Image (cartoon, rainbow, N blue to C red; front, side, top):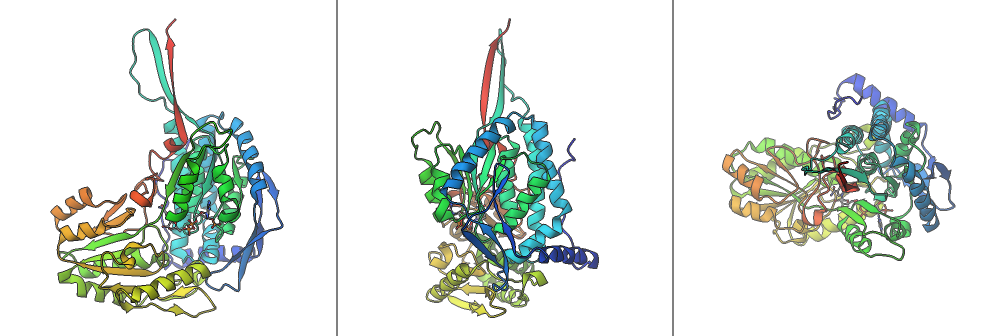
Length: 516
Ligand code: NAP
């Protein structure tokens, strides 16, 4: 029997007892610093000559650990192991599979603060952000365990005289899971456990910025007794093994989350049928964003500004749901910008393990790329706040940055930056606000702050985003509550954490039997 599903609550870290638990998690991770993550193929740990080095973005001189780095031969071995395991895993009862998946969530709950602490060290997440990520991972396991049982129910079909007709859902085979680094536990866990709960087996290639966090997930799977080969683990650079995984004729499905550029590449490659391939691959691509929050002239400006700041600068703007465009009515624009700047400029900045509100961006490459976008932004808009790197322990810090007078077609308004940069666009009325909000190639999250019921109703219908938030922050979707996934170039609208997610990794068999 599974416990009824409800999202895992968050801790209040101003409570000393909770803070002590987080400190204890940090101490456990501190004692494991320098660990080496290995490949896991059919339950066997495999080391390699090549290595991925993982550093603490708050102080990159600190090496958090390292990971073995897979080559295309390992892809071949992992494919064999995953298909071998599929023969057995796909025949287990849905109850057995759901039991394993739920148990993984239960074990993560027991290790919640250690799993969160890894994120403070390796991804630069402060305590609340890291805990929320682990809570989401736990939620995925528990929610998908329930969904697996629901998917096992026979589907409703019409009966005709003389026959018994049934339609049931079945797993489809071996999938490749390629997650990003920004929700380094929650996203891989969701992308792996959904298909696995449905009876498939997978090969997971974690993001190269966060292999130790993914390794901590593998260790929980081992502890939960997940059968060998159900989840195979191939850390390795996307450039080195990505094509081998995607192109493989025995890859049945690809579950990707990351940038638009890599998503498009995988979509194109996965459409090609290779010699020996017996199916068209299913491929799901969840990609980038240019999320907008509209603020009109009917609201409490302070409240709107506080939620704009949370949405834009939480985890340094490195969320696919982050607010990167603030669309402000002309009449309140200046007050709103003043309020945003007043709140954002007070965010203390420092190391994630010390729980500062603002931390580093993920890597040296991301640091360079965001600063280059800020430099080019200065040519097309007016910088009112931030814009500089901050020197502390060599960490990858960038000030929360706000541009105003941003043209709706400017690069700042169209191109994903994925860092702490907010572009404010002024509009005359709600028609224009919606028009600007919808005028990018993306459509992941969006929001409206308004007390005008008619405008909110219009937004529900006309704001083209997969996740729309009214009068609140636009980040923090909860599993089972706000299924997550966008429109257009934001991706396939796979809706992770939603009731249809497992269906993406299943096919339907319909059986008609003449009555005897
Ligand atoms: P990324 O550079 O596209 O990388 C994503 C994953 O793809 C990583 O595991 C990466 O491996 C791998 N990869 C790289 N090249 C590959 C190739 N040729 N073939 C196969 N895989 C390859 O994205 P990111 O920087 O990790 O993540 C940030 C992006 O993710 C942003 O655009 C953000 O908006 C998006 N995102 C979207 C959602 C959503 O739900 N829509 C959620 C989270 C993030 P390496 O790490 O080894 O390069």
